[in-house]
Amino acid sequence: MNWKATLVLVVGVVVVGVVAYVNPFEDEEELVAKPPWFYQVSFDDINTIKITSGDNVESFHMNEEGIWVFDNLDGIPPDHNRWGGIVLLVSGPKTKRDISEVRTIIEDPAEYGLDFPKLIVDVGLTAGRSIEFRLGADTPEGDFNYGQVSGFTQLFLIADSWGEVLARIANDPPIPEWFVTRTPESIEEVNLYMGDPAAAGNQYLTLQQEDGKWFGRSRPEDVKPRQLDPDKFAKYSHLMVGPQNILVETARVSGDDYSEWGIELEGQSIEIRFLGVTERGTSFTDGVLFQLGDKTPDGNYYFAAPASDQFTTPVLRLEAEWTEAMFDLFENVPFSDEDASAGSG
Image (cartoon, rainbow, N blue to C red; front, side, top):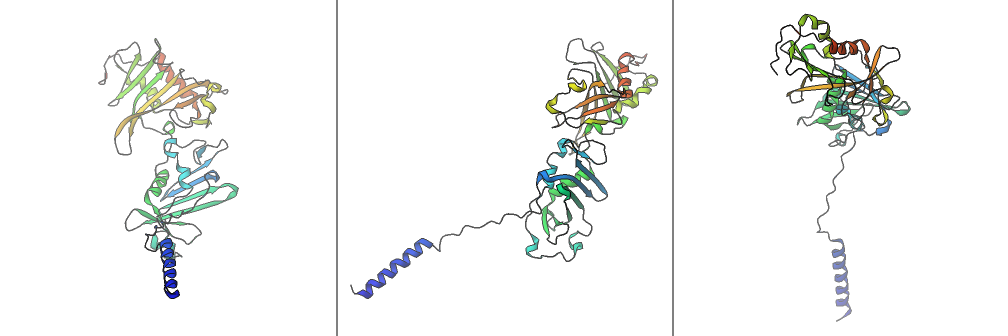
């Protein structure tokens, strides 16, 4: 073999080796771009939240106890079942894609419904900082909203579910059940417990409303409900909706120990049951139970805790006038002379 043939073979081997190493025919791994952040702030930096949805505005702040409370309801915390996760939600969503890749500057906010946004969220941060974001019109497909961080020109697509959850906070504020103002017609039953109703011999009083008439049952003595005298019960009927002018003594109790306020699980309590409706429109009987404790030093209130499965259960102040009038029914149940039974038995 002459040297020319040898050179050709050597070059061929090198080429084959390079091709085998580089392998230009191998399928390239498709790089999937991560969705960009609309904005992103630290969860721990957030200390105020204001949500504006149309004409509805609701705002919250973190109090000195580190508990989120309404701005316009003195010391009242939002319902945990609905509020849980909201702070994380406003810390920043990811977007489908960044429209700024196509158009860097929003030349006409009205084109995206951002001249009169349907949702505005102001997020207050530590050190006096803040950020505001706006959601405008729906995209043609309807699954996203156009979004913008105030002060920046970039346009983003935000999942509509993100805005819907935040808008509901303003349109249907997460007021805890124990603070909701109810109508007399919505009350179905009121129970007054002197102690644990399951304990042998403990008395409790059940009051039920049916078709606008009230019936009572002193337990364990009464087998069936007895109709109440409407005239004699008139001074009590307006109290059945629950306590008014509730104050918060403390929004958080360490270790679920309420002994400082004289609140015991087997102590006196008042339960108010009312008609509730699920988000799907299904009716059911809902309720709230106030576990009572000591009287306040000024004698104007009783300490109480609303029994619930919330992450934090506050200690409340219930007006003594309401609390004592309710328990006055134990000694003065205004039964009617006509011993009529309620239809529910």
